Length: 229
Image 1: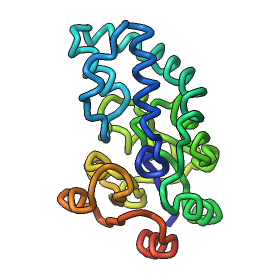
Image 2: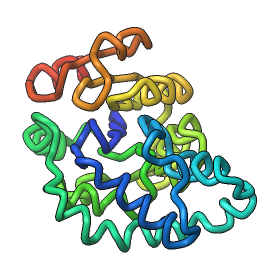
Image 3: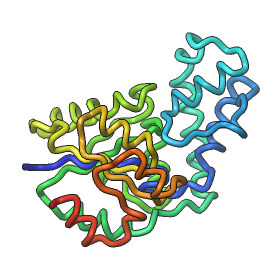
Image 4: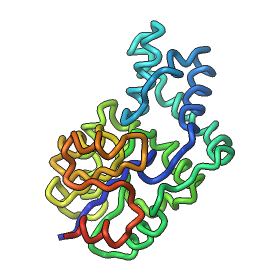
């Protein structure tokens, strides 16, 4: 049975070195003159619309207005990202280039993204870190839903539409570095693969009981053997 692999981006595929926070600050300050309590806000595992809504509501901006302006915010983030992502010297996480090369050569899987990033900024981040965004044939993005737990179903539906296949939780694997990735895999009844290459220790991720847990994805053969066991 063919498998669908949906990768998170930040902390899983790449390290963005704070560039995402800078693009968000630029967009919000351009449109609103404030980015709210961004300096103290924990963005880990959250979707872009969730982050934007929390920050702007904290300074009194109504949710309805925020929702209307989300497309404009995403466009400004992408505009700034085209510059700042390359300046920040973003890099792939350990083992990612070798792992993706192996995965892309297989015909028993479909590679995709499941990320809190907006669809406009996701490929820019990957490119800036030296990861080819064209390797990922489908995606579920933060700009698709405020709640990350809705993204697995979106990713599976898009994979089915693209291939005419029957992807569901039984043959979908979600790979991410935060507790939110594990929880959204559970919401989609998918296999949860956690990796401690981001900002959460392996011991923290273990508390959420992923199906598989790696310190990083550097051991390509071990990862493949485990995931395709």
